[in-house]
Image 1: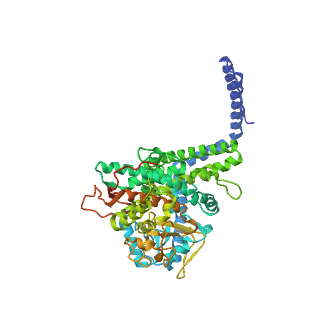
Image 2: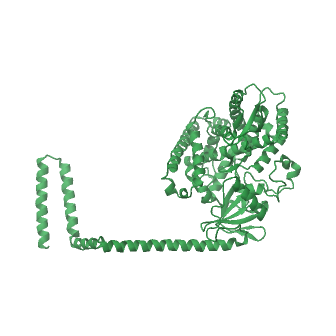
Image 3: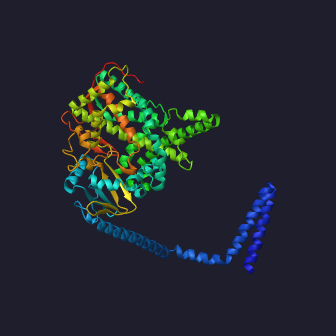
Length: 592
């Protein structure tokens, strides 16, 4: 051992003895003394072992943190970063060139340049919908579209071209992250967003919850929530307020209805403020806002913004509510299983159950059900997908009937004949099939003002289309429901409201995919029967109690009566959708 090391060793030993003496004098515990001594000697011997290399490490650090060393490091990091960016850019451009070549068989609208493409040309405004009309008029069935070198798309708006895409097997159909990715924090891996075998299993488990026998039980709820909304309208009209914005009232009504159907929860949200309902509405507004902010497309930026923080706060309210309901209901079902006999369990399962109960009890072929997290995701999706779309469909149906009083009166007469001789004013399940003309008007409104303007898909393999066209694997397919429903090759005078299109004799000659408000194929809307049932109940009761005429947006002034459509998550109207109400019955319809 070197003399220097020996001297340091002796010095360290002396210091250690002094430390022990000092510790004894201040009467520390034996345990503290042992820990201190053990730690001291461990550090000492570690330094001793590293001593020969310490000098080399010291010199290396001095060189590294000198000005020349720092400059070298920065140059090295800059070169590496440029190399990464260069490789990424080259890969992006090669991919862009490849997809541009593969999509050259499709007609392509004029672009800003080969690189920028159609970036900035899609608008969520009235002008954006008019642009779709121009595309349909010009290209008839489909066209290619791309946003810079990043996203490549095929836009389709003819039934013959829509059908192969929507009817493609579920195992090759994917929901793309470009459109649906922002929903994932809210909806998790729910049926709406999941793919492949995960989607297939969930679809099988959820389908029984939307069976006709289950939907029958919801008709009472639809009546009750509609009655609450109409009571508000009676009070407003009696007080002199006849010009009413539809979306505000109808959205609260559909949320109220869904909360009862999904959770058996009496929120009273139509009459008072509900934290959960407020959070749902804020999440919807924030999702719309995020779509129009380029920098907010990246999560790592968005979550640091004020909007991102608000989204998380509202999300915590919604998730906490759903989690508590699911856990409480799971515990209740487990308790019933322990205390009830098999006979009584069978009887209990025949009682009216809400959406959460039904999916809690659902089992697959292996006897496995959904986890609590999966059930929460599906319940959140039921609320998200159900309230806005149905509210939009109801509002636009009432608007179209307000603009066409002869059709409105014909529907009203149909409902009045149905109700003739009854004491109450309730729509029953059996009544839904006895409203043929009202149903025709609802369908025509769904065609003219589809709540959802388009659906997107991606495929794990090429999909053949008519005319030797093919959608390449990985390309986003935008199936334009609006474009298909307004295609003059499919519909005569497509911008006119004409319920007679849906007479049985007229529907026989129409393409099966000419009318697709709920999409089509294996991934169609699982809740479409639920939505149609609620639509018929609300429209029928509204026409029975009120006469509707077009209203005026107070902020727009009396000179502007034209409604400008606003395609967001669902189709809304700029400044709201205003209607004038005339009370046809002075008596109030109470909840039943």
